[in-house]
Length: 433
Figure 1: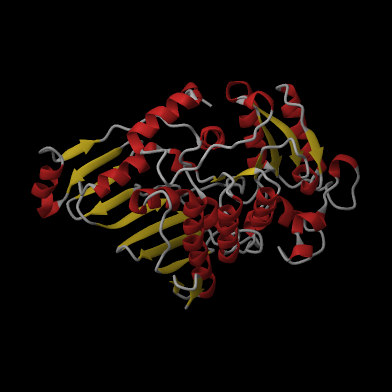
Figure 2 (figure 1 turned 90 degrees about the vertical axis):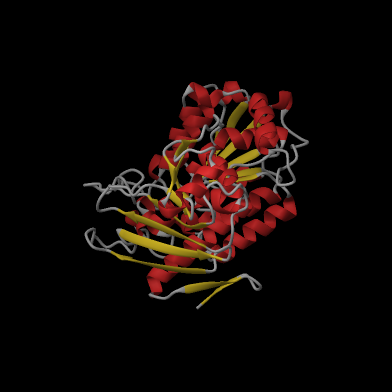
């Protein structure tokens, strides 16, 4: 993490509040109970590739942010040992648990970071809030639409801080674009686009957070033990019960029963920040969603496609087009299109006048045909989560934005799988054909 991400949280909150209304009605109030000396004790549930990355990040910022990772949970003993070792190397005295419920039972834990496979997100998130913990949940928020609504409603009920983890929501360029659109600087916005493409020779870039360990499994002992029944969650209806399958365990992103492929793994990162710009910090539920693509190259037994493209129409009269492929890593620019001009996201918003409406664009942009807009330094998602627990304020991705993003993404997944266009019944909050 670079030095800019260590900006004092008080400085960040003060400047952000004055510039962007961070302590508005959409914000959260500070936590009233923390550990000794204002320390936030963390538990991390799920320490595969992503979760281990979070452990490294959290212990790396433990001194500056006055936090400590005190508990680790995973269904694979070797991963627990690895994460606990990382913690102890940075003087974070963490205990390890195979059963996450033992972690949630600890009264000294203030916040839980969840980086399990997607099919577990909703259950653990809700149970953590029930146990009085604040929650950082990796994207996607859930596996299903129904789970997303349940998590949203639980957060309203328990009123805990709940941060969802799509990366680009932490970038100020999307929050700045919201003000640009609201003030009419590019005219009425009618559509936007985003992309997240990769082209790996191996499967390491998608579907395998680490290689398969053939010596691991539910019948093994010591470091190689995997609690397979717990990982599946079949006792709670989270996934079907099947015999031990190392490909499902180590490469769960290949299979629909545990996740939504590139849509939930990659495009969730793109839709959530675009919704901040287009609709605001709570996002917007879709009106109509369709998707296409196919499994064109990686015919290796996986369920999920390697080419995926989705289109979402919104009630506020704009359309979002997103695409993610694993067959070519050329990206299309992230853009928002208005009648007067276009916003392109290059680290800062760049506005350009368009076609016959250049004069209208100039009138809205001090006479210029092209404008680069300054953006602020912001805390990353973890830092923002810590700040909001302590000070209150605005999350980069709150539960409403996480839910509206999840609904659209999941509708796209089902559109691809069933070859149908799906609609959102806003009154009854359900997906219909």
